[in-house]
Length: 254
Image 1 (cartoon, rainbow, N blue to C red):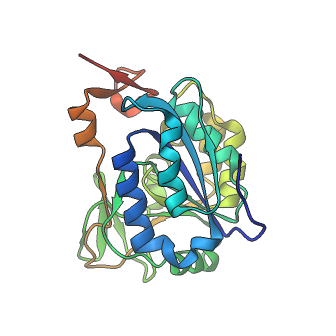
Image 2: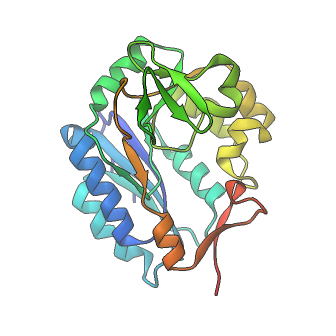
């Protein structure tokens, strides 16, 4: 059952699977470095796919309640990344959403209220994501692109919005962007790729917004992926497509 209070400021939307130690490390790092000051004003919306460690999904609940007073959790019958992504976005109601997959560790303190204020000051910003690489000079590198700093955040170049504006990395997202794209999310395709060209209706909306990366020149990376080692050790791979970037479901190999 969902647990919610009337003045929720931030919904945290999370796609997850059965790996409690990874989830605990992720939640601990984000609470310690970002969410603690607004503990009573945030809610976790989590889809827990039935794949991963050999445990019951319900056994994850004590980890969630250790950090969140308000939460909405879904235990689907079958694992599916597209279904999970759409479900958590469909439940969001707060004015701000922080999208967070279950295998990211936050390495640096982040002032979430400063992020929100920046997005209020720049109403065309759809999202601000956290950097996964250290900044270089006055820029931060995102894949093979360099985003310049404008004095408040690193800016996605306008001519690269379609390919690099949206990312599934931990990001603060405006509710209007969530509401305008989620009706068009397909559960048959990798959700992140739908923002880059695989979904005509979503791409049209993507092009109406601006995108940025939080941080300042000289900052180290803020986040790191902690899921890859688990996937290798437990023999899971991103399946459902020839290219893992388009994955739709975890698959176990022998």
